Length: 301
Image 1: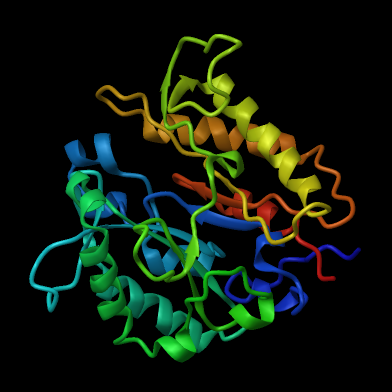
Image 2: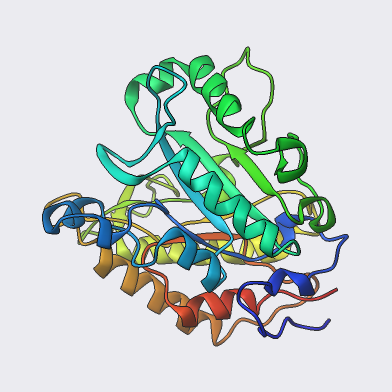
């Protein structure tokens, strides 16, 4: 097994084996990828700012998993806005796809995993209009050559030069469009934290808990992901390093710093064996160091 050596942040996926499923690639990612601090006011940042780098800067830093949350509205000729909760960002889906496709034209060895979901309560009841709008907007960006829209995990070869769509909104009657988001057994997303530990018999993946419980749950999922290739190499894992305190100020940056500190220290003892992988790791305010360390857990074979 030969580990990746990071020579280029813009083309690090060039070293990946073509026959490897992308579920077996450790991907540094961002949570609420478009909630960029420089685009928001001071008060907006307290509740919604999650990223220091612009979308283009994230790509250049090596980020390859993106969390794009969309506000559906009429008419469909108007591109969907990207939101973080109720907070509108400076991005539309059209702008996001323009940035992504331009990057892939310049760096055809790379692929991007883009998770989409509606960021509003009413959209949960309007899956078909949301899906139709998503298809309409993607249709303007050469979907045959620039997107992977099949409902199954591709290999690296199949994904190169493309946006791989992870679609978190699909009604029972809708035709599959992209890969379904993993079930809760393969996701860690404890996002509202408090200072109180959870009871030992609590839900193992609740929506609230202490920072210590979140990290412990994340660590267990990393271990599960590392070994799971023996059972199902096509199963993706998503392990969020993000969270908030649920009260003003939101503490998003403080939680991000603490979680990335835990991850950085844990990687000092990470011993890959077999097919090393950490899964897809959405982060708030990632650092160059942590992005590099995640990338270098991958192997070239």
